[in-house]
Length: 108
Length: 120
Image (cartoon, rainbow over all chains, first blue to last red):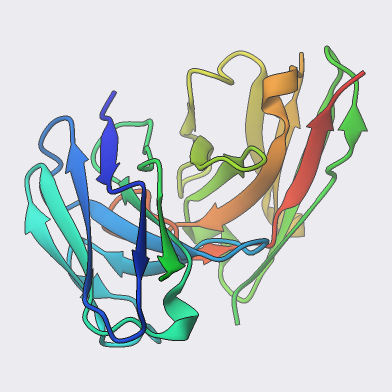
C-alpha cells in the first residue's frame, strides 16, 4: 500500500502569510495527487487534482506542484476563510487510495 | 447540480449490521465511479470502498474487507454500503463521494455524511 505523509501536522499563520504544506508518497504516484480542504463539521472539498489543476470555483491563491513522490500545496496569501484542515490523497493505480494524516492551519 | 445525500447512520451494538444509502442526483449515476470515505471522531479521512463506473468492479480497504459490501441501484440512483460484524473502530461519519472520469479515484463531490456509532 502507498503511504501518504504530510508535514507539518499543524501550523499557525497570520492573514496574508504564504503557507506551504508538503506531502510525500511512499512510492512514485506520477501526477495522481489531490488536495482537499475540510472545515469542522463539513464534508471535504476538492481544491487541487492531478498535482496542479485547480478545481472550478477555488480561488487562484491555491496552487499545487510536485511529481513522483514529493508534492506541495501553497496558499499564496492566507485569508480568514482558509483556516481549516488540509489533506493530500493519491488516486494512483490500485487501492487503497489513501489520504495523508492532515495539516491543521490555525490562526496565529 | 450534483447532490449526494447519505442516510442510514445509527447507533448499533458491536457485531451488528447496518446499511447506509447515498441518494444521487444531478448527473448520470450509472456512468461514474463512487466511493465511501469515513472519518472517525477527531481523526483523518479513510477511504473505505469504491464501485467502478461500470458497476461491477468493487474495491475495499483491508480494514473492512469481508465485512462491508458496496453496491448500487441504478433505477433508484442510490449507492449502498452494507456493513456487517461492526466493531467499535467502525464508529465514524461516513461520506459518499463521486469520482470524475480520469485522474483515478479522486473525489470531486461529497455528501454531508451520516454518523455510525458502534457501542453497547
